[in-house]
Image (cartoon, rainbow, N blue to C red; front, side):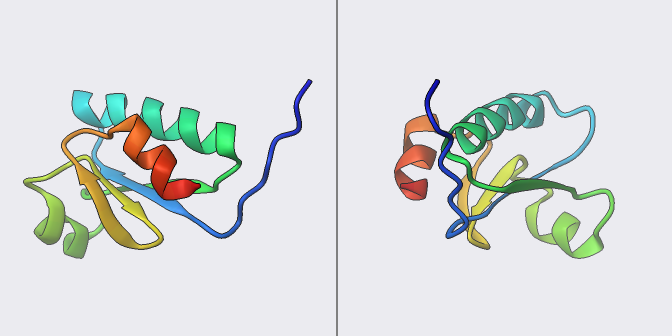
Length: 85
């Protein structure tokens, strides 16, 4: 069994909302990549935060890497992996 590398130098945030099929797809990719690489990630809903809703409502899902916008609408798995290495 291989050792899971815990990389605390990066964080990923997925911004979406419940009932969004693109958000569900993005969650699967983010979860798989981050879990595999040992990178912490969290999820925020635009329904819970007016600022996020105003900024990202037309782009969800949005992926932030280290607080900066990385992807929107879809998550490119290989691009996310490159950003986290």
